Image (cartoon, rainbow, N blue to C red; front, side):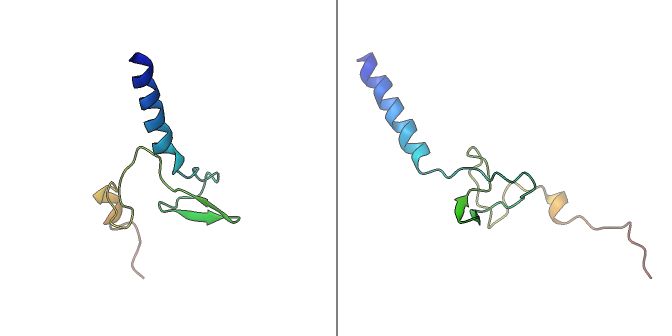
Length: 74
C-alpha cells in the first residue's frame, strides 16, 4: 500500500513537470512570457508563479504607475 501511494505521487509529479519548459538562460532577459532564444522555447517565469503575464498580475502598482518627478521640464 505504501509503495503504491509513493508511486502514485511520483507519477503525478512527473506529469506536472513534463510539460514545463526550461527557464531562460540569459540573466538579463526580463521577459515574463514564453519566448524564443536561438530556436528554443523558454518560459519567462518561475514554476511557482501561476499568474497571467498578459494581465500583469503580481506586478506592484507602484512599478506600473510610477510618475517620474525627477525630470526637469525644458
